[in-house]
Figure (tube, rainbow, N blue to C red):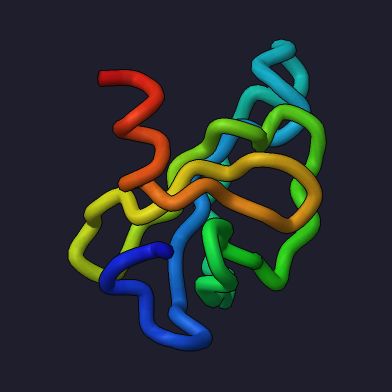
Length: 84
């Protein structure tokens, strides 16, 4: 489970939607609501192409999850096990 993620948390998604092609390369900071549901974080935002892998930050600026697919994110604790 996503430790430290309160129900209906307000998070910031930091992404480059639609990739980094020159006409659309502006980064986007999007405030979203999310909640922990078992081993995933469900977001009230459907990801746009290019947003997978984008970090979800809490109010302290700490990464709490990484955007996955559709409206789901992987809790950072689970992602750390895969990359460390």
